[in-house]
Image 1: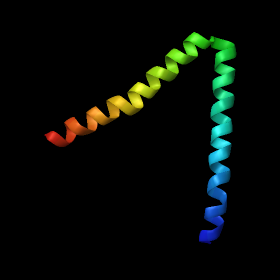
Image 2 (image 1 turned 30 degrees about the horizontal axis):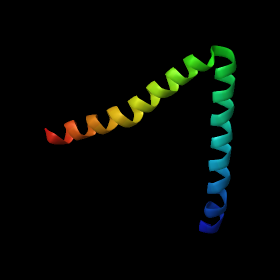
Image 3 (image 1 turned 120 degrees about the vertical axis):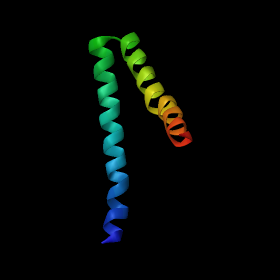
Image 4 (image 1 turned 45 degrees about the vertical axis):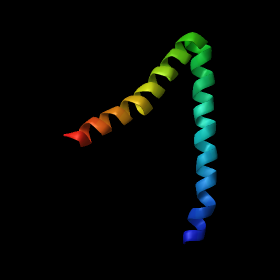
Length: 61
């Protein structure tokens, strides 16, 4: 059963990558590249930068 999981994991990763790329292209076409990049940058900042500062401040209490 573990061999099936090892085979399916890369397929799921590729499908998620394709879905993310399609979403980015469609949002850039409909909303515009500037708005898409602004939202992508804000999302990246909130997910990665704020997450790490929130975690460190949480564990300091």
